[in-house]
Length: 171
Image (tube, rainbow, N blue to C red):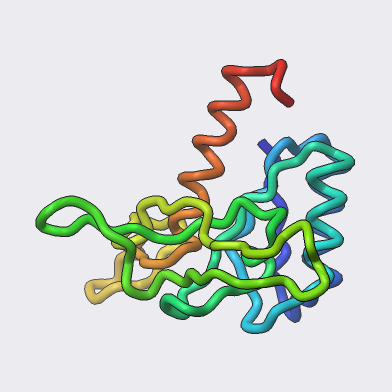
């Protein structure tokens, strides 16, 4: 496993591409991205298609927390394995109300007449997070529980890594 930070300081599309390039150059099989942009960025389709088709790397990307009917880039790309958030309810599990998702058409892309995202959901509500601890009353520092598709994405990345490790001929 390799880890790289791309959301440091004033992050741009260029810093995200540089981070993905860095990971591919170091032999990553999966790129896990718990991030999203508030706008559609068509360049991600090109970038992710190269990562998938040329290098065989699986991009696992959070779909966003803007409610159903909305999507975030790069998770909206047809080349991304996009992840939404699920939550435990009294009677089973359901999609978290904040989890983004929609069906969309990519104009001028006949190979993708209709794309429905997210591709999969995972636990994304009240997930014990590794975000740096915050100071709580009494002076101690503690980790906390968080909600979001960014909390769900690492679950899916981990499962994909286990499946790849069990089937080394597939990648």
